[in-house]
Length: 386
Image 1 (cartoon, rainbow, N blue to C red):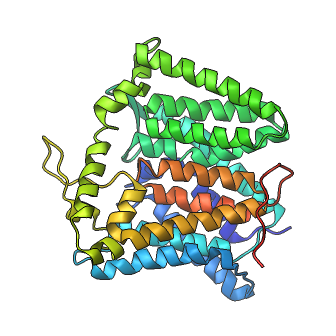
Image 2: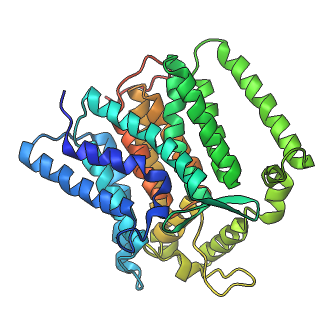
Image 3: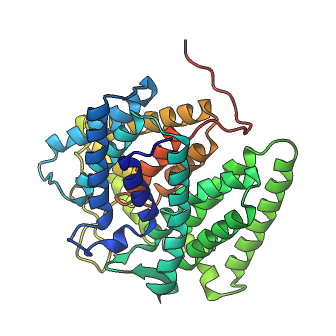
């Protein structure tokens, strides 16, 4: 079994994914993560050119079409620039392409799995050594300050693998410890989007369990969640817990997110039909919606992947995004690939509260959906098209 150089670089990218933004400024103004991503893409395509071994699956066409369409929308964004957002979008596309056209050995899959575990312990080390609390929330700052939602949301992919490994009953203590570390980081970061992401991953995981055990676990999960929400609503326990209450979420509007989304939808319905259909172009959200929160003097980004896509890519862009994930889910279901299914689920939920940063997670969620081998888990069968 061989390990390609590109795979070794990919493991490095995965391991440092949760602290990617915090590494900005270490070498250049760009983050280390971006440099590693570019290196991975270059080495991967050189390997493909030298070996001339690549595969193509028609199920991936919707994924390619979505990215190519969104990139092309930059043509009608008059203020389009090759900034961090647009470059990250393109890099994500190239990572997914390079991953989807080659095969992986069992040893390479193990290395990628180890990288995901490594990402959890790198995150723990960062939280212990480079974190501080402000307003009741944990922030990580190594070379740059990292958004708490980005920090916790990026752990969703590793969380998905740990949940899958629990069913195999191997290294169960290690997986339980890793899961508790992730949940602890989510709690301390005060990321409600991160908590929702992990809960949805757990829910899909529970539904994959064989037999009546799933109903017992589902009931226990419901009870624990109800107790947590009750404590949060009534301020029982540490002061941090109140951030997760329903009343705090409603009163704060998701830290102002609901106001941004409302402004975006109000803007969307006032556009001409062509803009509604094709969007305003990649990277145009802040300038077109032009939402300025009270007491501030700058325009806000969307903080929502779906609304962001609707504004920038229109109805066509959003439709292609749905087709993109549908194809990845179908591929993962056909291979009974539970890690990939959980990773995609985590990314989709993370996308509710994040926009730009979430594309790094998109790349790795797609990696897990594409490369993992068939498992012995009971998953609904999807018929192959004739």
